[in-house]
Figure 1 (tube, rainbow, N blue to C red):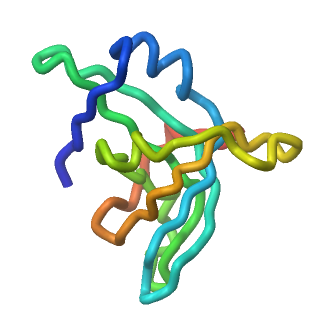
Figure 2 (cartoon, one colour; figure 1 turned 90 degrees about the vertical axis):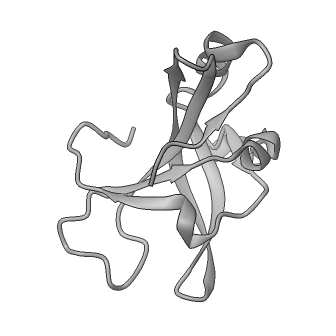
Length: 119
């Protein structure tokens, strides 16, 4: 899956300050079920377009068919997803943001990369 580029008021720096490394709640449909999960936001610039790439890393497996070595998933945010982000309702649990627009299976890809670290 290629990166989904989005725009954010204030650009990369503003998005980085607001979301990078912050906890996120989100819903994703997988195997015909809607699941409520947590992850961590990451923001990357796309210098050629001036847009940004925003994703949530969810540590762990989502689908029953995931290979055992799956480190987690990168959940790619579309513009609609980014526009639906609101402050989390469970601040005492450390949930900083909630993505209200649910994800479909096509928005996530397995990640075997070891650089992802869940706080």
